[in-house]
Image (tube, rainbow, N blue to C red; front, side, top):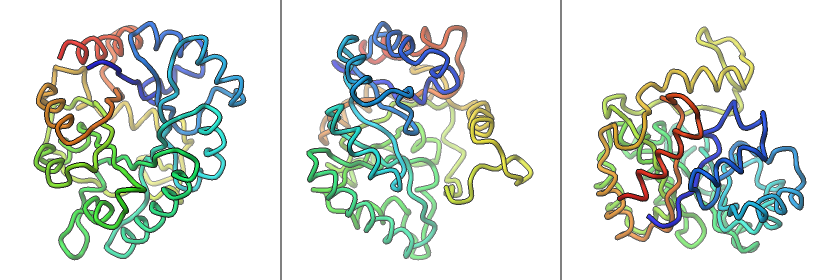
Length: 277
C-alpha cells in the first residue's frame, strides 16, 4: 500500500497530552495523513491546524463526526481541504429508522457534495443487526442512499467480529466501499451488537450515566479482540486485493487495544505491516 492514514481515535487518551507532538509522531511512524476523531482538532483554529499539518507534510484526509455535527464541521473541512467526511454511526433500530437515517445521509451528502467533499458512513457491529424484514440495518442504509452522494467506509475488523463474511458483503455492494478501515480481530464470534443511541449519552456497566472520557476508555479496554495487524484472523493481503478490485481509494488504520509498550511504536508496526503487503 502506498498511502496509509491513521484514525486519530487510535491515540485516544494520549493525543491531548501533546496534540502537535502526536501529529509529528504519526508522520514519523510512516502515515501520509490522518482521519480526525470526535471533532477533536487540538483546540486550534482551522487555519492554525492547516499550518501545522502543512509543516509536517501530513494530509488532513477525513474526519469522523455525528450527523448533528455536519454544519459546524463543513467550514473546518473546507479550510483544511479534506476530500472526505465520514459519519461514525447513525442511530437506527428497525426498517423505518434505518430508512430515515438513509434520508438524512442523502441530505448531508448533498450538502457535502456542494462543498466539494464526499460523505461516507462508517460501520460498527450494530449495523449488522436485522430489521423486522430480515435485512441488515447496513443493507437498508446502503440500498436507500444515493451512490453519488454517500459512500461507505467498511471497518473490516468490526465486520468480521460481527460474524460477517467481509468479502462476500463487500462484493454484494461492490463500488460502495470507497474507504477501508484496517482493524484486526482475533474473533469472528461476537455477532451483531445493539446500536448505540447518542441521545442516551454514555452509561456505566450498571446503566448509570457515565463521564464520556471514562466510558470510552473503559470500552476500549474491553476490546481485547482488537490486536496488532497480522496477529489476528483477517487475511489483509486478500482484503487489499478485493477492496482494490471494487474501487477502494484508501486504507485507514484504527487500533483500540493491545498496545504493547509505546503507542506510536505500535501504530508504526501496523503501518509497516501494511506497506509490506
